[in-house]
Length: 172
Image (cartoon, rainbow, N blue to C red; front, side):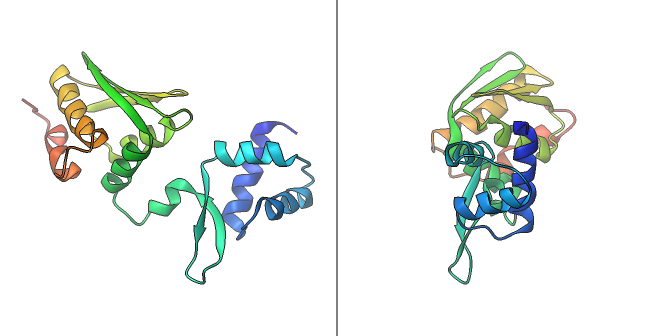
């Protein structure tokens, strides 16, 4: 079985079952005719950003990291992701380059994409870098300053308010 098929099956199982341990997950995979080792399963769990959460009844289960913050605003989730994963940031022309812990840039890129900020032309995520492409250099500098404050934990301002200019058509 190919890795992508195994990962897809794991995602499906996590979404459809309350799975608390790697052994439970392995048992579910075996029912799906997927044989894997504990080491491979551990790597898959890390790659899928699965975490254990405690439920109201004090039992635990695996869930996707981003699902734990779904009830929170996108801005809150972006701030948390930046605090947890961002290492450094720099601005070059129209580009904001965000250096992130390995395998986590997709989380930040997807949150930025979900915000649908008109000033952002797009994002590209690699192994440890998130490239944010903006329409103007001025917009790139503003975004870089906002995100830098969060990464360096120097900002107590509301991210949503700080990003308002990037939603305006005639940013000057």
